[in-house]
Length: 173
Image 1: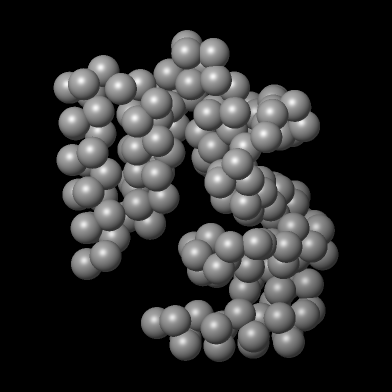
Image 2: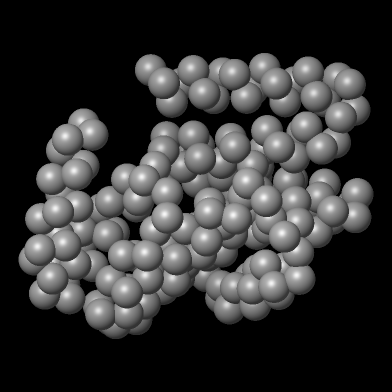
């Protein structure tokens, strides 16, 4: 029930932020709602929340606030094999190089690695996929990407990594 509680909390918080016209708080909530939407399998909601956060962050002149939604959109592009992946990656890398991301540095890093891993796997580069998917910084995102990480390890012939990630996931579950 923690996923539902998280969505309920941020749903309440975003409603309050919208009532108050607190754009920064709206972006904050939208960025975090993406995680729960993804876990629920609602990719349409992930895209919608990320696109709104991106538009709002851009409209208030806060480019650093657009990094997380850009990373989510890039992940979706990789997952759905969309043509805009390379453009989103270029924009994100430019953002990260020019603006400190603060607390979102590690999540953006991991979303980027996840997207790059998916892209590599989709092109048949098992070793490249594993290289990206093995470099997560945050355990929560590593667990979210566990199916892709374990599959990449198996396809790349790294049974030790596949076993370790499976065991870690089993301990968590």
